[in-house]
Image 1 (spheres, rainbow, N blue to C red):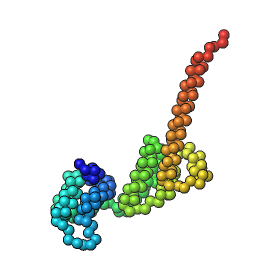
Image 2: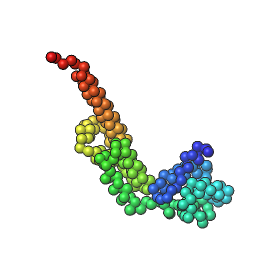
Image 3: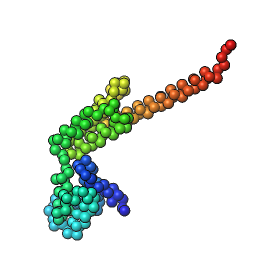
Image 4: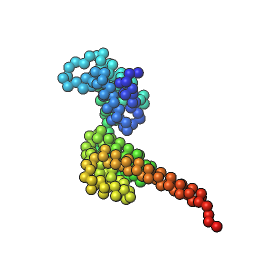
Length: 207
């Protein structure tokens, strides 16, 4: 299997959750194969039937069989593409409100660790951007800070006094750095405590 095929081998599953990611991957794949003109034809020129059949086949092979019901009557690659878009492109108000609610209510205390917290925030923002909802980078960085518990307040004050430009990447890096520092301090404290206990055991008791 060629590299382009490996990158595009993301099957469209049972629902809307992975549609935008799938669409991006398959669009890139078709562009690489010089078949995207079968889907978008701005010059409105006649499309080569062999190329169209090839594009149609490649799209269908990247769709889970449970979704064939949406495309089995389609005769062209564009019809297949448009039918899938109508079935799965959920970019309406309800979808936006749900994702925005998830984004604003995610907190570190509700996640297992800082990695899960950052990943959840970033992936939700990515989903919003995929359906055309603009998520400002500075706002996203501030949101990452707003979901932290109270004991992170000194870190937030330090960021404010440093004049650091707030962005999702800068805050994410700062959080991961903070966690690494906390882990190192915890490991040092444990080692120090262990050494202290051993020294006490080795010191002979005076009679």
